[in-house]
Length: 333
Image 1 (cartoon, rainbow, N blue to C red):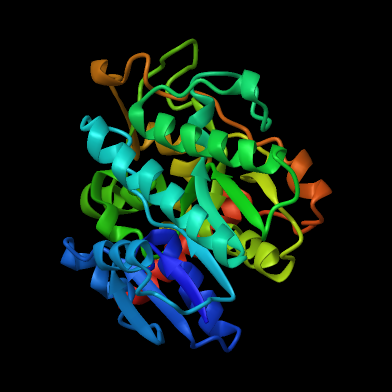
Image 2 (image 1 turned 180 degrees about the horizontal axis):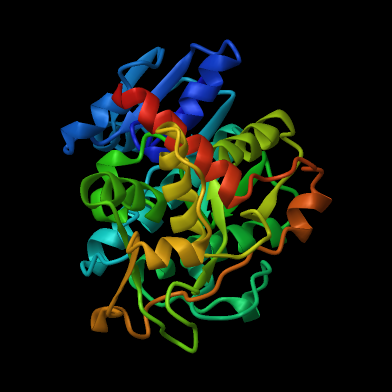
């Protein structure tokens, strides 16, 4: 049996789907369905049980959850980077994770969890070392603080079982609709283009030209593959970046999205300059509330991930977003 927290969420539901694809049906899904839209992510999945997050915490704290899973894959968190309630964020992302890690350690259960590239803040170096970490908001801080706890555990000597954390960069892909404003830019660009025939990007900021801010955009398919690799290699512990290792611009995501939609209509692909000339890409003022809180550049350093033995290549924006758009278009038919 495998426990997946955040199982109705974006990455969690894709992970359960992949586990099902490997023949795994003995999955315990843990989540909070206060946002009932998330149930759509569970509807086509095979699980053995669903437990509300609050009930799961209560059970492990008072000893009522006696089952010993093969692994606990912790994807549950508040991922809204604009959330201003720090107490809520710390309870969901730090306290919750600490309770689960302790429970797994006591029972020698492998613990695989979601961290975030937000821990790096506005820096220019993205390797998993303390000197490169300076989160810009309470979301990033909640992830950073838990990573620090994991580091202390790793440094204290041999662990009772695997502890592996993944610093996800900008993830996009199916099953993210419930995230609303926090869904990927690929998700929003697709919707904008279908509705208005154009997509909106930020004007230049922090020394970058309009739409040329750079991020490491990674497909959820690749994120899931990394999780499954570590599930299959329980001797591997540590904190690892999960991105493509290649920064690409928002302009490139917009171009890939629009051209993928055009392909579904039998229309030819257009260059970025042609899309601009046609009015398919529009630049809007950079939001003042994001000044000082925005990562204009990210690029995962994959050195540690590769040393851990993960050798698979990652999808670039053109191919990854193309697959995503094709899947969304097919689902809409």
